[in-house]
Length: 382
Image (cartoon, rainbow, N blue to C red; front, side, top):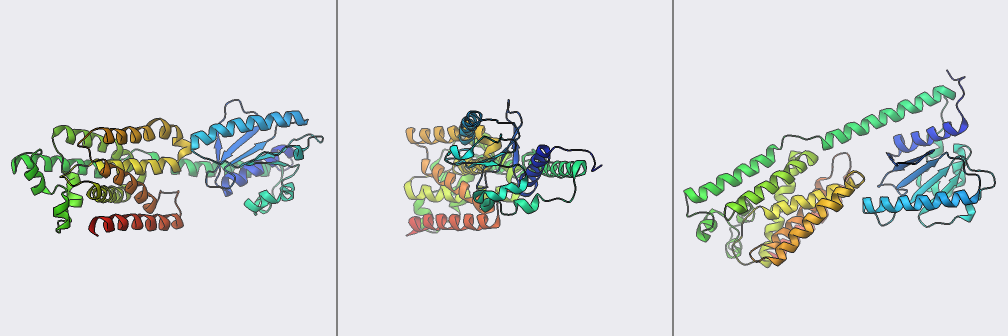
């Protein structure tokens, strides 16, 4: 098997692919029209983009054109991934002898010329980021045996990544979301059965609506209970529909326990912000729903390679439009919306994203969330 010839170029390409995909966690980028080059991304790495170029470039003019085209593609990636800076590493495996990389000096782009993988050691900037690259690309297998091993390892890693993506994005039954909607509906009916209806101020207060004098007097339960009360049928229907659409997605993405934590933190954050800026009676799940939007914003940013277009075309416009409406229309508690939005994002930072967030990031998230909530409590109860 090892006697079958594999070209030096193909072997180098496979070794680099194996290293960046299986060791460094990069993922392939599909680019239409790209030939003899492979693009990889890892938004958590110092080099967010790695290009492995096997196309033969025989003069400086061809190299300059390749660099120009790369810059245009990277610009598109920056827009899609909301990245201000995208460091790119281009590894050229088949450059002509007369091509001089020293003539090219581009910000945020490193160019590497190699004949064998070991040549990468000549580039200190690359070794600084990937200090194990030469050791991890040194194999005892040769020829077709090596090619098969590298291919199997890459396929195994891709299968693991696909299983992770399926685990995260697979639709699951939103039991928590449906339970919250059920409680909203039950309390809404009870306000008519046991009181004078959902629009009656006394009934709202008796059922636990948010009212600052009562909260300051010790009715702390209102901070949470008020999010399950609604004023009028339209208010109930709109919030429950929004909750179902957003909650179903986030409950699948985060898992039930994390989703429940994010929802209640959003409630508390929205209510506390409302108490700071609003003196009237308020109720409704809109603060918590904005918290789900904040959570979805954080989730989408961390998976922006997959959801970048959704962030730009749907999530961010939806948040902006609803906040603008809140400022334009009287009677809307926009303070609760803003408080919930911030609380939902911070709460998601604290619980982390499965397969994505490190323990260090979770600890930082909890510290930020705690400081934020304590600040709101201080302002409300000082």
